[in-house]
Length: 442
Image (cartoon, rainbow, N blue to C red; front, side, top):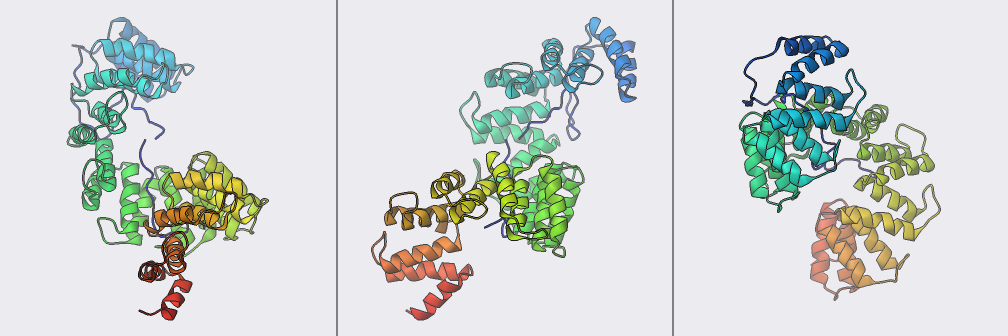
C-alpha cells in the first residue's frame, strides 16, 4: 500500500490494488514471451467484438480460440470473468482461466495469477505463491510483475523486508517506462526508504510518471510543489497538477484541491468549492476528505456550524483509520464539542492518531496526563508526549515543553531549555511564547 501524500501548512482541522488483468500497462513497453505461434481467427474476431462491447460474441470467439489452446484467449476469458463483462463476475473462474494461460508461459497471465494470490481474490491469499508467479513473469521482462516483486520486498511479504531489493525491481520496471515503477521509486526517495531522503530525486521520478499521465504521480508532483519539497513552492503549479490528477478521478488530488480552496492557496478562498471537491473525494471513500468535511461543519466554514454533523464525519473518517479523523474525533470528545465530554474516549482516539505519529494528538495526550484527565496525573509522562510532538515542530507542544522546563514540572527546572523551546514556539506563531520571551530576557 502506498503512503498517503500530505500537504503541509493547510487547514487540516484543530492501496486498493488495481488490476491489469492481462492487459499491458499504458506505460509499459514489455516484450512478452508467448508460446503461441499463430493468432487464431477466432481470437481476432473476439478482440473485435470486445472492442465494440459485444461481450457475448467476444466470449464465444475467445472460447473457440481457447479450445485450440491459445493462451491469450484463455487469459482474455479470465479477464472477462474478473470484470463481469458478458458473464457474471466470478473471480474463482477468472483465476482458473488465468492459470491455464500462465501454465503455458504467458507473462501477463502469470502476472494476473500473482496479483490474485497477493490480494486473495478468487483464491486464498498467499504471498509466497504471489512471489513465485511474479518472478515467472518478471523473468520474462514484464514490467508490471517487476513492480509486484518490488512491492513484496518493500513490505516484507513472504520474504524478509529489503528496501534495496525492492528498489532494484522498481528500477527495472521504471527503466522500461513503467509509470507504477517510477511512482514507487519516487515514494522511496520521498520517505527515505532504503536510501537517504532526496526530494529532488523523488520529484524527478514522479515527473516521469506524471508526464505519462499517471494520476498518482501527478498528485505527488502537486504535493511537492505545495510543500516546497525538491522544488520551489508554487501553489499555482501545484493546483495545475492536482487538476490533471483529479480530472482522472484521483481522490487524493480531489481532496487536495479542496484543501487549496479551503485555505485560499493558489485560488480565491471558497469554502463552498472546497466542500464540493471534498465530497467528490469522499464519495470515492477518501478518509481524509471525510474528516475535512467534518472540519468545515466544526468551524462553520461555508456551512452552518454543526458539531453533531462534524462528529459524524469525523467518526466515519476515524473508523477507516484516518489520522485526521482520529485526531479530530478525539479532540471533540476532549472538548465536549457535539458530544458529552469523555476523556477516556478522547484518549482512545488520540492514542490511535499518536501511534501514527500525529504531533497534535501527542500534544493533547500530554495535556491529559498533565491535568490528570482520564489517567493518573503524571507530569513526567506529559513531558514525554510534549517532547514527541515538539520535536516534530508542533508549536503548541514546544510552548508546553518550554513551560515545563520553566516550572520544573516533569523535568528539572532549566531556564535555558525553557528559552530554547519558547523561541521555537514563538517562531511557530504562539503569542504567549512571544510574551514569555519578552518577560524573560537572557
